[in-house]
Image (cartoon, rainbow, N blue to C red):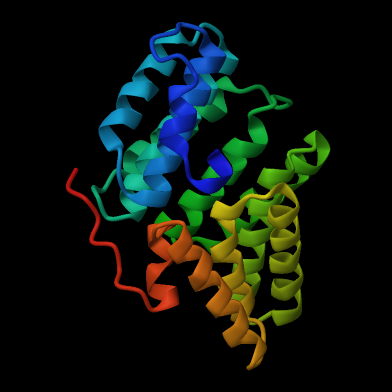
Length: 238
């Protein structure tokens, strides 16, 4: 359900009101992801996140909840809903202090810190270092969905640097993984990015396919609209 953008429906299956830390955290993660992709559902995500923070009983659980808190603050900042950059950095710093070096949550934390460095801090080198750590951790733990994300974001930095061969390889790997997983919601962005590495007419074909899936999904992710020449999402009020 998550792979097709049905975050609310998936969250509804996770027994709202439960005090199980793993379930409350998973539910919060789904609703935070919905905010990032759609620009909507902020109040639901905040409520679910507070429940996850309240249910956390160990440093690992508190660190994972802090990571989600950072992701929500990052999403609000990136989509222009509200500037929560300081909150994002603070939450991710708290997560880093709570999660042990070999923690299962470290790769995702490194990835989130990379996003903040790239899109909020405008620090591409710091972002690349964080993505590289996340990439290695995802490989070691067999987290293929996170691996597709690290391929994509490292490739995006390579594209900005003009390294087309590296960018094409990274985007192709990200696309391969998402197609294999059936992760439809993550496919349009990779297709559009890969189009920037290809000459015409292949570039046009890739953008057309990205636009087709984008429309099929109801215009998500909202931040992709300008790249596909769709009207930009105005962003809801906080």
